Image (cartoon, rainbow, N blue to C red; front, side, top):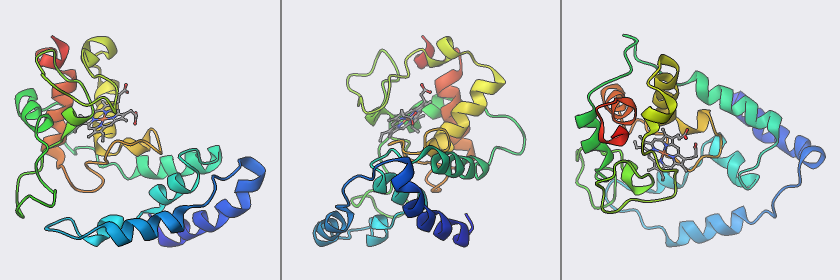
Length: 204
Ligand code: HEC
């Protein structure tokens, strides 16, 4: 995103805010000071993880309910930055996708550099009837492909969702796997297959 555009958005929100929506009480400086005091850099988890980009800053500033107009602008910006595969094929191998979805390894402070990065999807979503445990921060994805259809449009939605969840829902809690470079194109295709392929355990 163009830096001037970001700065303009951050500046303009203070003009927009009073007329459009009441701001949440601004405890951000206090909170950041507390986090900076207690967060210790370890391994690959450095202090740069505390830096917010414009989207995170806006969501935090407006307690996840930014003014509609600003939300629309930023979502469009996130959507435009999604890199869809050049070959136009969005569906990979669901088995490789399942291994990724069930792995929470990589990029944590206890992982050695170079550890393969997983999708960690199971930590927030139910994905198959066989799972013994799963998180519930996100909706269950059981039968997602059966219910929503394995159409070109759904494939594009799911690819985009995994690449950058904030493009469709600005203040989503779901990590932006492609946007931040945690997962690459092949891995995202494999995850799309896990969610949509009729043979995947998600759709059994
Ligand atoms: C930290 C929690 C978290 C993780 C990890 C996570 N998600 Fe999500 N996901 C969410 C939340 C919350 C939502 C609902 C809000 C939204 O749509 O952004 C969501 C929504 C979705 C949706 C859209 C559901 C719908 O009904 O349209 C899909 C598809 C999805 N996630 C797939 C994945 C996949 C695949 C992974 C692993 C690569 C993953 N998620 C990892 C939290 C998470």
